[in-house]
Length: 261
Image (cartoon, rainbow, N blue to C red; front, side, top):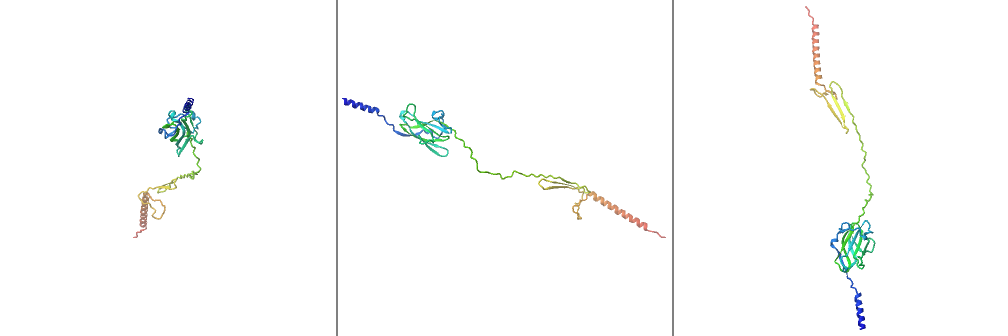
């Protein structure tokens, strides 16, 4: 009887101390939380104590494993981001300090690491994610974020000097001579010469002719033309002189005639 009692107690103790081992499994991130940026996510909480040490130019990400104790806890997370120029895969916890991260428990469940946070440079887009967990769960979620401010890049100085080869000096020559020639003769021509600024003189002769031609037929270059009034006067004067001469000759001939008886 004593041996039987001791064996029963030992078996009960072994059963009581034995705990079922949680099987490790891999799950995916909630499809609704893909293609998200920290600044554009609907759940923002920059007051999360886990984000206290976040640099201003970094985004804060908080992931959570839902469910009860049967869902187990995070073992590792593998997250893929688009940096704008390439894709980067980050593992939580990671081996380096490039992207600060941590896994931590919820409340008193020290054996269940159901929270994870990560810092990345501001502006990255979460493309996809998976997690190795202890226990059973169908997915994990992006709980909340805190968007950072991407640093502004100052414009790089240009090393290429571009001299200006166009001379700015524009010589300005303004010559406005005014020449007015108004000779007063019997022909009374009037000439006005007004050279323009371009250097091309403009000559506007003004002549008054009665009915005669331009004259100058006798080889007198540059001679002034005779007006109609002057030609008539000369003609009348010539007729008077001719007539006077004729009368004078007739009178002399009459005086020279002598009569003899």
